Image (cartoon, rainbow, N blue to C red; front, top):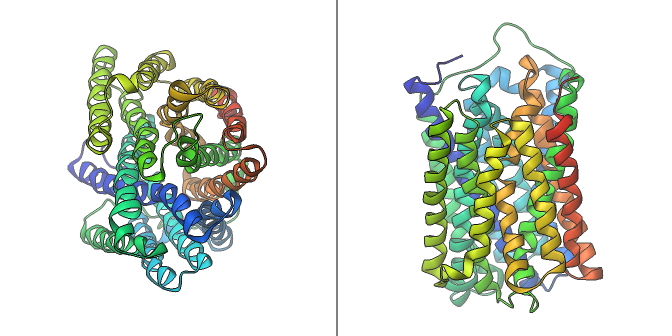
Length: 457
């Protein structure tokens, strides 16, 4: 295993971090596509949520195929290496984005779903390869810290995605294109960026981890309790995060909440994903081995800096005043103290962070206007460290079954395909606001997983 301070490992982490940024940016564009395609094709909420069903359903299919191959003939990444696995994922993702061109040309909703499915397959491969690669690029004790850092830049992508995507799809290209055509140029640009990233990784000298001594077959990863329960945690976490994000524009459009148009609401989605970015950068510091006094000082500094980036990006678009976002600042302060209470323990921190969204959802469901709006947007702050903490706790101690365990966890990202349509069906019946009871159930289980579920008994 390479030394975590080596130049090679640092360069590898930087390159992989750019990869995390790209798939965060592209994934969050689904939140823009949903209301856009809903209007273009006159869809119900349930039909519109098929965007997430197609995209995250591909994670399940991709993860399942990988798992079955690893059972029959051994772990593929142990043979081809993490680098080649990442390149394959990038090429598949580029194929998915380029399919947006014929989908828009034929003005067929099913074609868009097919393009999203292919894109999701590519991202599934990236998740299987990149997440454990980041985890093993240094000591196991700091794996959560490294993954939180990379996920922080993933969240930076999800933060600026709604601003840029909302501008180009709802405003700039909407005025120069008809219907679904406004998505063509943005997704062709993304295709080029994915291909350039694949070329960069191909030419990079990344540390190579392959199993050249023996091939392990079977489903050995499933014997680990922390992985089995962790897969359920991933399912519920991704499902809740995606469902909430998918309904934000519709929620902010309610007269009882803010009464925003789609174009006005889309920049505010960045507060939701920007909160995840802030929390993940704090998590990278909190879960590291830095001296406690320096740790909390650094966390405070990074929190202010990251928030300033989020606020500035949204202020330039909306002109929102500092006084208008007071509740959000309160939630940021609560997040900072939650890290202190978590005492740099991944499980304890996860449990604390799972309890906060339950309270915020109750405010968002039964409240109105200012506090209800910011309560829902503030959930992203507490979603921040969930993926990284769940993932690293679930694969801890798996040894030769790490990649297979990763494929199982990626398979259960399918929660992002299942929960949004369920919430969509509930929203069609009882309205958007009450439908937020659906993701609330996820956080109850996540609190348990952080408390006891991650323990290897």
